[in-house]
Image: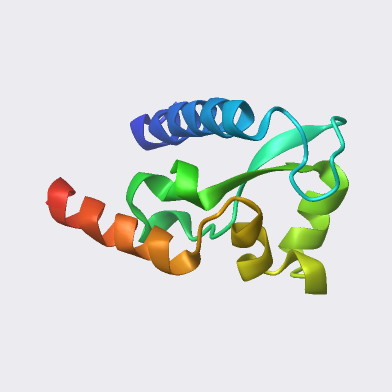
Length: 104
């Protein structure tokens, strides 16, 4: 397995663990406990430090809500998801820009 892929898998596992703890292992959109997983609200992996796997960019969603979020359905738009976790894309981008400077 490529080193970069191993790193992404490890980062995702840590990301999912932190999001799960914060969100209580339930879907933040509908409250379901079935088939819940951590979801990157902004998911442009290669453009972001740590592949976007930071607490302020993640939300626990069930399979159904995750599919709606991926399709950018009305109530599942980026800003709506950030509101559910008291974050925003501006906050995330600010964190990413600080981390980019540190990583250089």
